[in-house]
Length: 265
Image (cartoon, rainbow, N blue to C red):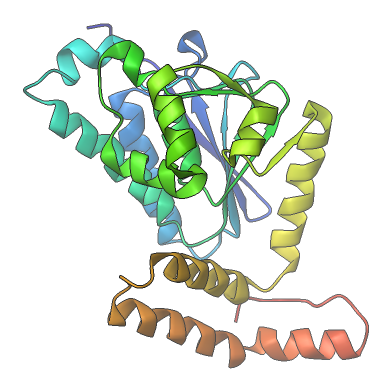
């Protein structure tokens, strides 16, 4: 097995965190250790009160992430330890999925396999016109992990999921938009501006309201299997909003025809 390469970096600017997948020599392929880093970072975000939004991207313009690091497979994904490998990557994906603040996948270039799984656990996916998507499991003789498969089918439906899995073919950005793998496609310059625009909105709007909205939408998606405890938690979040100083400030600002100044309290 080749020595591990790549790492995950973070940068926080004005309460917005950017996570970058860094393994350019392998088109940002995600190694086992990188999955562990992603999980650790996501868990730290979940316990933070200073982050308003998260953008996930690949280093450079060639790839968001070309998938898992296949050079590790013989040693880490053989019949004896494949379940451990899948558990490790799924734990990272679930950690990102459970980040309480809004998450955005910013996709340039290749987004394959495990990279697509990572993008799919973000709340929203944007790309420039260079983006390409594929699930090469059938070319590797492996099965796409069940958790990722569930999320894929939930987003694009069984028919599109099947053709991606059966064919392992590449899909360009416009086709991905049609399939609902993406929500927005634009030029590279426009993408940079759009990220800035979204970041500004996240900073301007009421933090408690955004947190509650994400929790409520996620709860609505999970019904009717949602637990009573989860319903109680999202109800509590709604109550926090209506009882917050931000709610009072939002109403006053609207009536006074001025921009609100939210504090998250």
